[in-house]
Image (cartoon, rainbow, N blue to C red):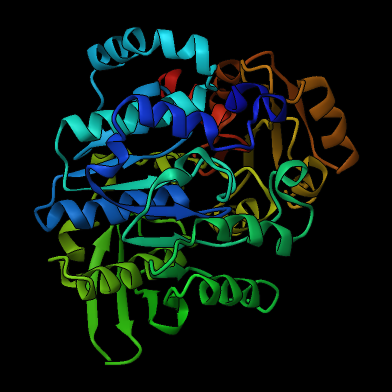
Length: 416
């Protein structure tokens, strides 16, 4: 499966998912959906949007990936994970199909989510792509709204080695006549989205042209935000558990999406932000600048590419009073050298590798870290690295756990 193994397990084709869905009676057609792609911010945007829909009274499904600790985190209704019994029964039911269709892990998971949502008679689902967009298994749906959060260099071996190529793949989720919200407007990619939207006769909205948002207490753990609608001057003040500085752009995207859904006839309101966004951990969102401990400070973030890590490190370094400590591990198919160049050389590093085949071997990571001027020690597991870092923390020090979903997931599983 791609998540654990990497590109060798990726299937760039929709035929298996279409065959699975057809054999199940096309459950994906039995509920409305919002489809979300992008390089970074998909998970936060998906969860926040689902929270708004739930607050408005809609029975809301949520499909995200990957998971941190429990596979069932990927498939939720109102924050509750899919029951173990359903996972077991569904797998038994589709075993004959697995032998003939031979779906990937991700393809089977997508079909499982659609089937549970259909059986539970949800009103709407927020569906996050796994990889890319055009050929992602989730792209068999016809949503009421599409969202593309941003474009950065990631999965370049599969999606292309330029932002323009990657944008073209992400734009593959734009469907005929379905409005699309773009979370980040920039010169290199906006023409690609405009062209695709025009071809599909789809309304195109750039979020930053619709809303502005600022944090009125930029260092608060429970942030207070002020959002302003640019066309009307309408203001919404709300508190949120999304404390990462990078979340501002995600929230602008969500507000634009809510505004468009309201125009499409959904009873959703941006004014519900104080309720919807107060605590997104109830929706299962973890590992997004998550403060695991305040004194000394311990933060976990699943950032795993240069763009995401740059945003996390800028915020974390502002919060260090004395010495910084970093538990760090990557998967082998990322631009690790570029990522390491962003880390401060005056921190203490605890290099590790997660227990997945795709992980970059810790010896190789430590060697690359040394070449980047980062000093530290190597550990055989994430749990050992976290334990050593916690023992070394001074009262005013700060620890960051990052580099991979797997590293953060294993740290959480270890009891943090």
